[in-house]
Length: 99
Image (cartoon, rainbow, N blue to C red; front, top):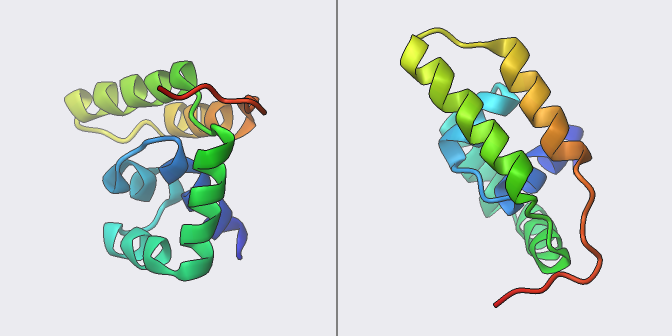
């Protein structure tokens, strides 16, 4: 997997939409769809989800940043990069409790 594949897998596993993942990774939605359909990337997404890759505060921060820039009508690359870094560096719970 490429670094971009890892980023796509991580962001999808954290619950972001394909549109949000495309915006953050600088790709098209179609590219995200193709990568998610790849069996290797799909397996990585499943592994991350099983590990509990979702960090709700980081996801909420990213969604808020994307919503703010959508309202402004101008991409805020600093906010995107900051939010993506927070998501990618968020600690993972080794024993996720899912209901």
